[in-house]
Image 1 (cartoon, chains in turn brown, blue):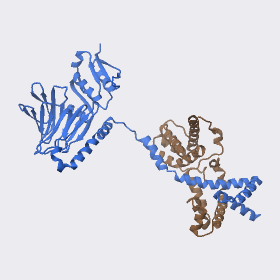
Image 2 (cartoon, chains in turn brown, cyan; image 1 turned 180 degrees about the vertical axis):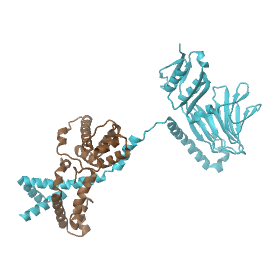
Image 3 (cartoon, rainbow over the protein chains, first blue to last red; image 1 turned 30 degrees about the vertical axis):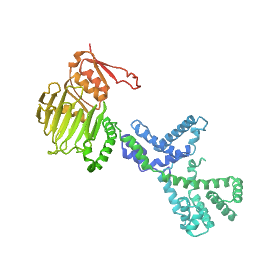
Image 4 (cartoon, each protein chain N blue to C red; image 1 turned 90 degrees about the vertical axis):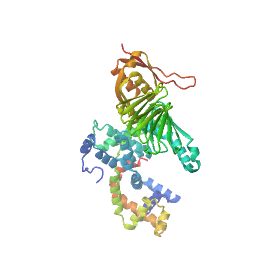
Length: 192
Length: 343
């Protein structure tokens, strides 16, 4: 499960297809990695819009240089490219604003990072949430996915705010035990 | 102890939910500081919490829209077509005319008399072409440096337009409603036909080629009346009011309408004249011998530079391009190209 699970199609095949100008495979790879890479960039530069631009430019570069490119792991290729562009982004900010912005050292960014794709993340979290006791799951879902406030949930379900808080606490405890092995892999997302 | 743990879980949850009280907050901070184990547990819980935020964020990202953006840039080569551009410009230029026509047509009944005396004029600058539709549905293509005037509403007895320069007409068929083009001293009378008329004021002749149908050429004093057949070229001389008819290759005369510049055994002075209008430049032939060179070529969307290069390849000539000097009124003079005989 998770990041190291072998993919049904090997990176080598995918890269080979892209090199042969297979647009369908290119789109497939784009859809698979895009969101994860945007989140990844967003955590480095903290600007979602610029992150989307960065990731798009990485994909465009891949297509434009497809004939000569050497890729062993698509995942690490993308991460490296996005990271480099993020550093460029910091540099350009520095030039534009003419004051000191701390550029994270390249080495610093390498630590314990990993890339989660949208699919992987959804699969992991939805399965874990799905396993919660029904009432607990319902309340947790309303809080985390529907962005309802405690008071709103309490009113909607006609229960006390205290009960809502207790159920969310219970959900978090169950989920932590369930997901603890993955949390260390997710360190990337919690720089701040 | 178990009771304490439960409380701590609740406190952590409340902090993440933002519902923690000040007192509880202080208690929690104390607890976190007590051991590495506590700190780890708190940070794991916080990560877990954030993980769902990430998950929400990731779900909002629209990869198919993003893919659309990049595939548009990668897979559709945008060819900047000068013709398309000209069409757009022409369309914009024509908007006021259309608006005006619509306005007048609206008052057609009450103002019919007046409208036949109100004229629209459409003019194309040098280096540009345009097309338009007349009030009766006739289509007109205007070559560079040409002008057409027509009433907002044609009168009942005749559809009359006046032309200076070159135009290609696809006249709406109506046998009972004659269509007449007046160009200088000559009138072209037609019913429903397709023809091209070349009547630039600087030339002392008017050339008409007939693509389809039938036309009559009548001079201003009605002393000449010539009927043309399709495929014929009629040259009307302004000096002696004579008409000379010959069978011809129509393509050469109407190619401009589809953005082609076509020369078939044409003398250089005529080639140069066409190029001047097409590219809005000025030529000077430095050696009179060059004027008699005969030239055959077809250009489609070529730049002036490319055309000039071709000229030098197929005839023993060379050229210089002068700088555009600023004139007294702050505008720039036309590009001037001088043609020399190659030694």
